Image (cartoon, rainbow over all chains, first blue to last red; front, side, top):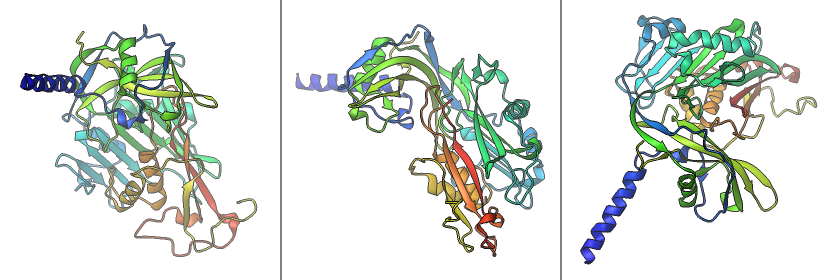
Length: 313
Length: 116
């Protein structure tokens, strides 16, 4: 009797492990959520969420997507500039090109879908002339024009439906208040669900300096194939994730939250940064709402799995 | 401080590296900064002290870019004498400044994006 109980216990534990196996690495997104204790009010609609979503498996082949020649041309380098990768943890398939004085370089890490093109001297430093730094619309136009050269289809990007253009993050660099470079970060989407954009992961960062020249291009864009499809969690399952603590919180002191009111549920894919190995890319849900603190209300985001890993559609 | 000529930058200091906003304490900032100057960071190549500082910022000050994110922006600021912004570990400007605070420059680099 005792032995069968132990076996049943082991089976139960193993089933639980299977359910959560391959779940998204939520710890990259915030602090552990205090499980169970916080009263939750639910005011969110989830009828706009997809019925199911796919977990993608990362494959290391065919990177860079546009081919090496196109990237070398963009960097102003040739095959003759190939050198030995010196970075920490360099893999046999990694590639490194630089010119004689190190002013231009191209680094490619196929296993993590990362590449970087760097062109020194394009962004003005003190004592140098600042000339023709593009404004934001021009920087976006320049970035979009480069997409075919790095093998990114515009349709793969997160779109801003109101502006009818890719959604982008603006990153400014100024010298004594005068812009010397403008950076545009574009994010990828998976089946219409945006990448959460942790750093430039799941996206491309373009930096433009004098006369709209490309100063740097950094891309983390893992090649993926569909792995498995699961049903999207229900409201009760999202509440279960909160209760059981399968969540993280974008707030340093979750223990001070007295109640949390969920106002929105937004889906994202979590692609990790270039130095973080990743075998699968999972969707996550952002539970956005208001935390009641002892003296005030605070808007916060809590991240949990988007999927019901026990339910195939 | 700048307007009152009270900058902690004398003519021997090359660059003062810091942030113009609040910044997050992260485990990897120092290692990325050092490795980028030494040429062993992911992007390869030996980068200037100034450029590596900002690169380490973009690698360490990262958070989700959801539509409701309330983190950031984080802006790194580097101030110093004009000839020192290209300093790297093996080649530094031997005569940093002329002692005239009016010649001091600063460059602000947004290393983490603002809410969208």
